[in-house]
Length: 182
Image (cartoon, rainbow, N blue to C red; front, top):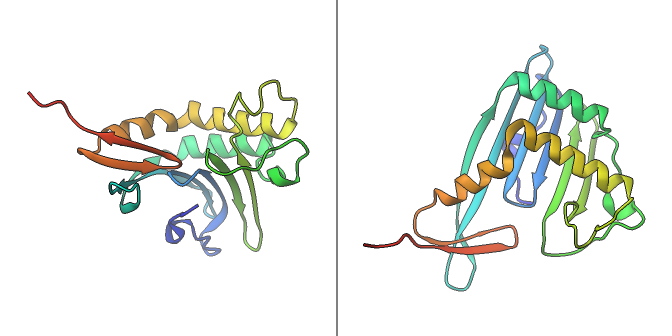
């Protein structure tokens, strides 16, 4: 995932804990508890303009702040759902590791610790139709809680629709946007 590392750096002088949720390469949700007891967070959407061959040529982004109250509530709820300890999907029996599709990454950062787990297509009913894999169910619940709180799916759709005419790529998806002409 091509995360904007500068904004995701953990500063042990001011940060107590940071949760980073990556939706493939096109959305990053950052939730931070500061040492002074305050909370901050943001959602960053990414999309790439592409050429006729589908090659990415220019990145566009949009950063939206998340209120401190929502960040605090989300971080507390995520901790209760074992966000900090969920194992990596490649170490979970029955989880699929693939290419293409949507990879979800869940990262916790502390002073000298970092825990990251990745899951490929955890929301897919095709790959996990009648799943009883507890980790997939937890990832789905985590994503559902985040979406209920900040509506990241609709925010991305609105962001993508706001692009001017052109060809675009995000994740493994591409689309050609043309406005109707009178």
